[in-house]
Amino acid sequence: MNALSTELDVISNNLANVNTNGFKASRVNFEDLVYQQKRQPGLEGGAENTPPAGLQVGLGTTISNTQFDFSLGSPVQTNSPTDFYINGDGFFQVEILEEYGGGIGYTRAGNFLPNADGELVLGNTDGPRLADGITIPDDMLNLFISPDGTLTATLSDGSTTDLGQIQLHTFVNKSGLRSIGGNIYVETEISGGAIPGTAGEGSLGTIDNFQLETSNVNPVTELVQLIKTQRAFEMNSQTIQAADELLQTVGNLRRF
Image (cartoon, rainbow, N blue to C red; front, side):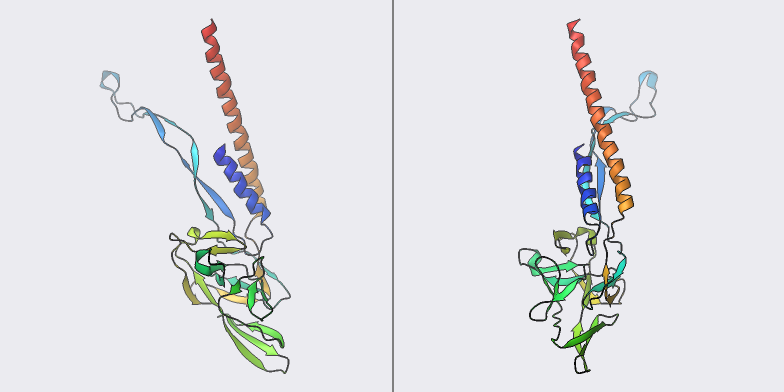
């Protein structure tokens, strides 16, 4: 019941973030516990017979880990030229507080905005800066991004200027990343270090603007799993109640 309660929490978090940009759903992985060996498999029985199986009673289940699903979310059109969509497996790199992973974080959310100095920052509560050092000119009329992440701005006088290039990053084990909230992940020992690259190379994907990646949570799938987990929780509760009633019956036998 404790393990199933944790799964309910994970499913609830997935459903709560169904509208969160770049959010990646999590799943719970279970494993069985140790077994009571009441009769070892292969031990000889009476008349030198070898039973085909032993007698093993399991002691329940536990959660081994939670695992991110990094499948691609659907793109949605926006009206902002600083909204970016990664059509692949890459991550944007942002500067975060030193207490989280050495000041560097990674995100799939592309809802960037210029701050008072024109620097592109992620549109969350803390507003971490895009680590590529892109600055938006005050007199910019429009912004274009090439598939390799190069940004070109059209200015009010009709001229164009290159603003720089956005690099993407990936990891050997993305499931090993640690989420710190705000649509940001930080690397861990098990995830490996970030591998930088140019958009369009390998599986990193290309970058488009005027688009955002939506959450990859499938509400129908999550609701079905929610119902299954609730029913399993109820059945386990009834099992415990039945076992308790059985023990009470056994205890009452001493009165006769």
